[in-house]
Image (cartoon, rainbow, N blue to C red; front, side):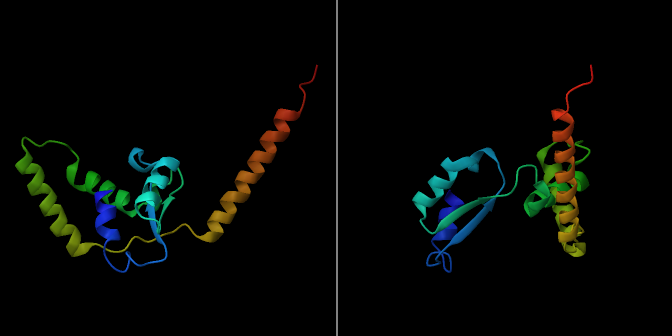
Length: 134
């Protein structure tokens, strides 16, 4: 909430009609209580949760996954100085070569996925409603 308060005190957020805070389902901001807490503190703020198990929508989580795999694995550090040095070296290299993520999942792919889920659900429903042969 400290970060939210810092942001919400500044323009254009302080005077905006609505400010959407998009968050994952982490324990600190999960559920209606978190949404109510945010709206009580900042009436123009709305909490929007990404779908459960949709980590790929969370760009910060994607970046930290890259850091984990490229800089922190294997975890062979003997002290915190070595962790700091490896992270700083990774940051320098990453900033020099980073490119935007290329999304490959299209709306057509989503339509196909949803149609497949509908078919699966219908098939499963039919199979469970058929009485076994005697």
